[in-house]
Image (tube, rainbow, N blue to C red; front, side, top):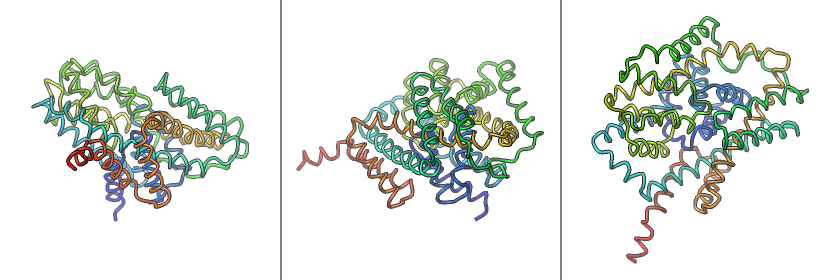
Length: 407
């Protein structure tokens, strides 16, 4: 299969099956590209995760862009984004178009017991995927007591940051790198070829300048209520949100009362939780329902606005990243970051995943079953996800009670 088509097909598959949020997506990516496709190893994967984690924007989407571009050039990065984002964006834009006619239907749907069960099943499957990623990454990257200490430190920092300052999750990785530089004296040398992307300084400069110009200039020149104004609003959200995922919600809540009703906003946000792929695709829904513009054109403008900063920033920082890799303590620093990545994933496994499951026997049972199927039966991730979602929907929809009552 040609490389471009291979990239698109794999990311399209992930875009249809990767439930659970941005950190869970990294578990799906690792399983697909490290274990199955073997496009890169754990060290290279962790380095890409570390790079994207310190950039604003949707971390999992950025990791996908880098992996796609690493495999098949700039077009591969674009197709990776299209494949991963497309399925959810199409569903959410379609929902937004439907809600322009009747906003009441989504509220009824998202408050139903069946929808809650569907979310419960998907959350359990995501817990299994993240747990597997923590286990396998830890086995490959945590080799010494110092590595373990760095991972535990990153775990603690990430938990505190998630509760009190979500935009500072990157501190866990920065601390891991600093501890690695100080304490890891026997880190192996970095490979001669950088595992990320080869970007010329000229291209990086152009992309960096374009990012700054759009971020600063668009709000000044965009006419109020225009498509350019809509693009500028979403570009700002994609440029200033660190951590991705739910952290973007406060930036998007400004649409409530300014073209989108509160009920419509949270109904769409609730449906987004049941979707695979990036949560930033919620921007397509908002673009579709925003008045007076709305419709498919506004949805596409919103999607382009919120994701374009990621493309520009990735290209802009690559030469700097390559230069940093050549510093004397780069190997030890990166080893510390790799250990911190394990801690960061473990933090998400603890909160919100474990904390949400601790009082949910059904969710725990589904998560354990999915974990066993992934680890021992080596099922593809989409199959346990689909089974858990179906099980949650079936068990919470009241069908069993109805059958018992009829019997």
